[in-house]
Amino acid sequence: MNKRPVIIIFLFLAAFTMLNAQASDGPSAGTGNAAPAASERQPGDLSPLDEQRLQIIRFGTDTEIANLIKLLRNEQPSAPAASTVSESRLERELLDVAKKTKNRAILTGVFGYFGDREISGLEERARTAIEDRDYEAGETVNAALQYLGNIKASGVRGILKDILNGEESRFLYNAIRALGLTAEKDGPAETAEYLIEYYTERDPGDENRRLIVVALGDIKAAEGTGFLVDIAGNEDEKTPMRMAALESLAKIGDPGGLDAIIEAVNTKDPNVRAAAVAALGPFTGSDADAAIIDAFRDSYYRTRIAAAKAAGERKLSDAVPYLRFRAENDEVANVRTEAIRALGLIGGNDSETILEEILKERKNSDSIRINAGEMLLVNGEKDYITIVITEMEEAKSKNQTPLYNGFLRILGAAKSPKLEDFAKRLFASGGVVEKSYALDICLNNNFRGLVTEIRSLTDPKNGSLSVKSRSLLERWGLPLTAPESPAETSGTAQETAVQETAPPSAGAPPAEALPVGAAPAGAPSGE
Image 1 (cartoon, rainbow, N blue to C red):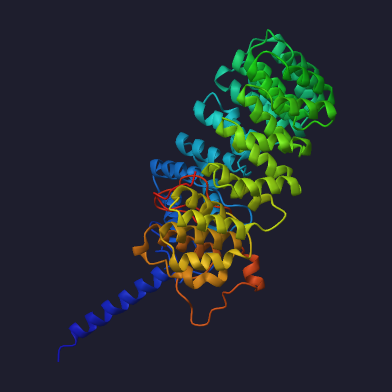
Image 2: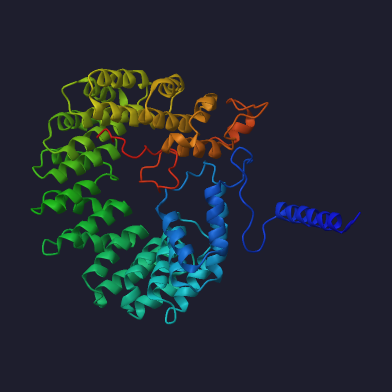
């Protein structure tokens, strides 16, 4: 018998086995392993989507990496307490890329991504880009300046002043902004005096002058108060400059600026009046209170909005009857909305009684009732879940779809043990919109007792619900299918350690990764 074919087959099988073993040991230099199936992944593993993103960061072209960074910047970041394994892994890789690359698009994008999230780690790279600004792309230098400002980097005052002293127009705007944002912890008094001198002795242009006024507020140094008072009270000064000065006086909070703010409440310019009323929020005293109350009578709607915001910020109980009148009668929808928000912030029995009456009054507009319900759910001392559910069911019975969906939306963002049975009902009998908000409720309240209902939606045929339910299970570190001996109901120490508390995303999610907390495409907003 010829043994040669047998030997060849044996060698082939041996080689094939070795190749499979090598592939399972770790990623190759070029392509990497395929990500494990979601049902096999353990807590800490990346989802298939994030594994693909990781490979792009490591091995992608400049264009592919730059496009990915744009996508990441548009996504809603997780809250600090959320499961952020994927984000931290991707961020570490991006840090490594940024420290080595000279590519303009990548570097600009990474500075923007980390600056948006106020994540440190790129300070030295940003300083290098600024120091080498004659050889770097202008957009990269400006992105580096914005990054240092956003993270409030320390020890950068010298390099920022170099740009101002050189009057480098390409970078002046972002350098002034960064100087204001970083100086609060790094020589605030000296920086404020430097900017005031720069404003008065040089000619940086109107927009940069306005930005210096804004920066003085960010610095929060009392040395800027007198200078800002002069601008705020100057009737010949341009409106945007006076408004910026009033806002900065509010940020500083120096009592020496209060008289100028109260005086500006009575100026002829309606926009300055509105800015002055808004600036009263941080200040205390009967004069400030009286000015806010009087502003509710102003014919300019922005002044009434500012009065509502200021009353809410300082929890001004004397404003409650004025806020009720504005909430129920103002002709401008934004004034009504801000009045309801202020009532929620002020709180107390009187405010909550008014909000409950507004919620239950069927003659009120949908948006007003929804806003009142939202304030009760967020700020109410009592549990208003049952009342809001009752109003939601009434809206459904009368086919008031926008109102019904609006109540669903605010319940989806609420937190209460009473919502577990409600979410279970939505899973059992609701449509796509109801099930989507049920997933939000489970996320916000860590209702792991409903994991079976959540898993029932993971089939790809469920479209956006499948993506959303899979995302929730991955955030919780749970497999898509039930293990043989699970211990997944709430109450264990391990589950408590990985509780997900991130609120629903307010922005439009990327098509390929609809986040938990976002309504499915086409769902009515309820507004």
